[in-house]
Length: 94
Image (tube, rainbow, N blue to C red; front, side, top):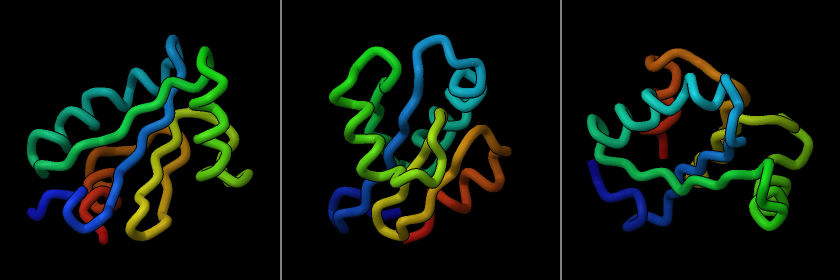
């Protein structure tokens, strides 16, 4: 798979420290990075207001919580936790 940054594609993860659903997604993020060769930009939003503003610019009221994942190539997002198959399909698009 091509390097996501070479095409301008970014996979972005917004999470909160101590969020149990975010913790559930950590192994899936790590697995996708290893298996698919992608990298996620990661932003903690509960304790960092600057990161929360960045999340708002992508979220636009669609999710309103974490974890929130955004694919800049497709503008598709995942709100909350999901299974690896769904996560993988989302990550490889674009």
